[in-house]
Image (tube, rainbow over all chains, first blue to last red; front, side, top):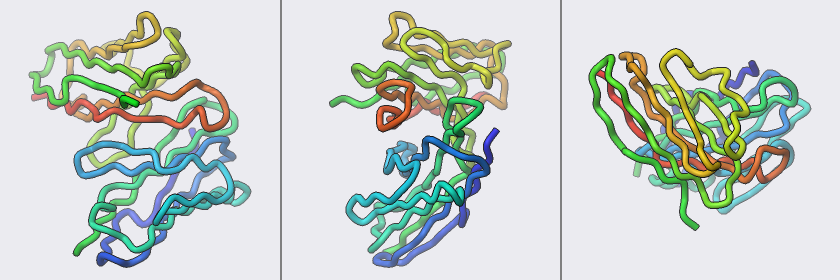
Length: 110
Length: 117
């Protein structure tokens, strides 16, 4: 199946700092989603972004499908941003389901 | 709008016992997914339904896992008998339908945390 790699695996930020999380994937995709899993385990969908750029408040995401990567930007980080960020993709051909990366664990300290 | 509901939230069983999880998707969502998330890993799809039909169960260990979605709404996932390596969080998700576009955005429930001793 499609391979999904996320970097960095762990990130510690001071509150107010900005960060960029990266997702690389090994094949063409028709579906890419970013999720945030909070410390209680709840997965929240942040963006559906198979291509292009979207923004939602302090978060924005860009997917360059032709180069097989996506970036999630977090600006002015807050302690509530802590958790694990997952990128999940669906390949354009083959299995018709989402494959998740191993995530980036973000810790924002006050 | 109510989210995806799951129960129980936690379950502790001994190996070789049976366990069942329940999921109620967002109203009107045709597609339902069960994922297994082992500690430190991303969720892995076990099975997905479109209405009451199975779309993909290629990663479901069918010798011990089973799932059904009668009437195309609620779903149950069963493990019989459980093994130690089944300890994980079982997540249910739903989306409007299995197709291209925004309708495929998946919404997750809170999960059931299973510990097999």
